[in-house]
Image 1 (tube, rainbow, N blue to C red):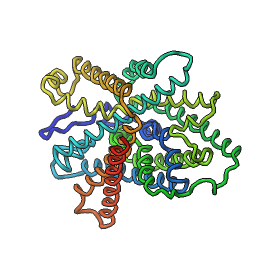
Image 2: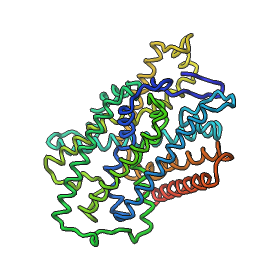
Image 3: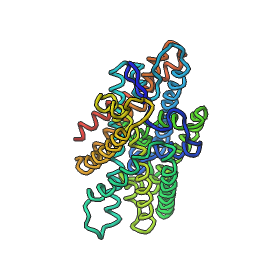
Length: 426
């Protein structure tokens, strides 16, 4: 890992210096980075709270805004690498962007928010998998926490895979599981809607409870998780010039899938739509197939969620003298055996800590709501727009400044509302 006088760190992916992931591999990694537990927990509930029209528009707006902010991060990287100001720091990570914008405080704030967001998403994965395994294997007397800790060895082994291109086969498998599960859910929704003989008049287009719209918006933000993976995904791609176009195509497809999924779910069950969409399904082979498929998909997606956490943790460890010297030895371009052991141990510790947290965190729904509405809004909207205005404000057109300002203030609104909602809810 390279170091400079400003304390910057290059990405920890093996593929960072020269991306090796193909277009298909990057596509798989983008999908599993964005599509996680959000659509299972919040998508249909968002439509129930906001109404089918407001929900559709809200998901579309959040999707386009998230894509715009992801594009800002990629443009930061491209412009920094082309800069001729003699700076030795390239904006390869979210923390680098924070440092370039606001110094050490910006780096610490960015990395702290990434840690909280990715840890929250990882905990959500473990909780969902544990709950569903407990539901599937009801005849066994294993507790919910037992299923979580049974996953620990598997997730530790997957976390030791060092590059996104190597994780791509697992990502593609997870994508297939998610698509099949979503297809089965939509099929059941359509059948339920046909049997129920619903009409659009029986479903709310726009809720009369305007206070619920910000909460629904926060749910939609949580559905587009994985923002912290943007730079790692761009760095891992072999042909980085094609990344923005691929990201646009992928985001368009995911946003459309979210809208259709939430629409059909709400049309099928109306006000009876449950918080977790699988709870609305009948107890038969198809619902079990959905649960198994989703659990398998999340098992193989989990190491993708861990990557930003490992990147930050290992970056901090390698700045400590006692860790840095054994890791690099006398040759800064090679990794010693002791250094590799240190990385393996740190990644194993991260998995164990998250498993412990997932098994004992109280009021998980409140915790997930806080992470989605508050931290995700800051990472996805506030920081990218703020960095853009800070670094390139003097060269931006008026409409660009206005757009960044709108995104920033809307993100702040969601963050403040999410914090307020969490405090009041508790």
